Length: 80
Image 1 (cartoon, helix red, strand yellow):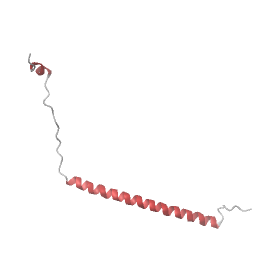
Image 2: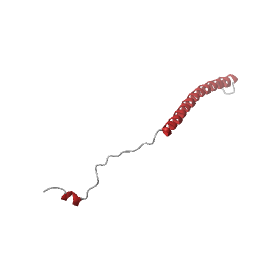
Image 3: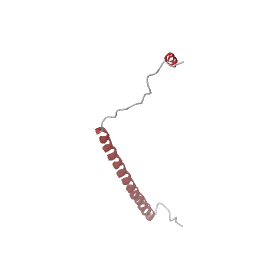
């Protein structure tokens, strides 16, 4: 009695290759979608970097409460 799943069976090899080809075709579609998404992300990053380079420089403003006072001066400033 022969085994119908034997790798020596030519129909088994054809079926296996057909399944492998179908899986590779599905994988190619997925890889193409990833490639298009990454290309769109790359173009977006490139355009945003060019836009940032054209913006004026940012000046930072920091709110400072006042000059630091030594402890001896702070005691003399208090009226008694």
